[in-house]
Length: 427
Image (cartoon, rainbow, N blue to C red; front, side, top):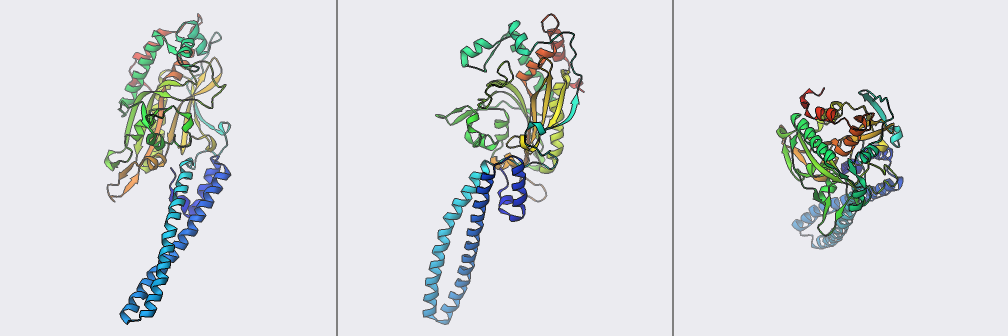
């Protein structure tokens, strides 16, 4: 959540509103926010005026009482009773306005860092660098879903029979491959300083609020109303909320966490997009990376987090690029995001496989995650970051395309050789 003090303060309000416009927040929402803030300012001015009048009246009443000026004392006392009732009447109005401001703020995205390119959509994103070698086939490579169906590696039809569209069933080869990939990625990240956690796959509403899924995007996730629980869209949600309403010591930071979990997404707005294969499905496995750090280190930790996610793609010799998202394409809670996109040779397209984001204190304010400064003893909000490290389904889709042979098979030997290589050798 945004720091409400930045919105209440007239010196900083204009800058924040301008940044929100560049993030694509509609003008009607901003106008409602401004009107509500102005009403609050007017009421605050009235309240402060009345409080000064009350305080001055209390002093005069004391003087009148000491001087025995009974008539003037009672006259002023009656006037002060009116002032008291006016003050009492303003307090609930102020509370109502504060609640309204908070409600609006809950639906406002994070502001973005200065070096984020300003733009409206993914067309305005900036390619930072391209890595690896573009795959060169002596034959026309098949898309992953086609070769998977031909070889009986993935049963899309039975996935639909069980659960509907965008579900699938892996056979033994892909099941084993995914299991090995998950273990490989976890061990690589643990070697890099991440601590593994096994977390619930169902979380309460406050967890979804803490990381920014609720309330704005409530319809995009699977919810179990009778239990007040939600299937997690990513391990970022439980990992971040492990420390909700807690205070770190400064010495405990930075803290790196990782977990492998299934992820569940309704994909409500994805009609007609990537309808075949493993690209846009309702359930998939993913290794997640989450960081907590002090504010002055989050920019550096963001770059290191990007490198950690890239290690997986480098190891499997995938051709990929790093893209910085523009202001209009950033995720709701993010202040800066790099997407890692792998090149899919069969469709000649770039596919996002990891988003590496710095949230600053946005999530920490919502989840109330703080740390105590060693020297001042003051509590401050931590900065949180996360990345996919990486999505297993999309990685499998890429590997099926990259490691297919002219005979329409998969080079399992090469794949398993890569999985057996020590991850410490990754450049």
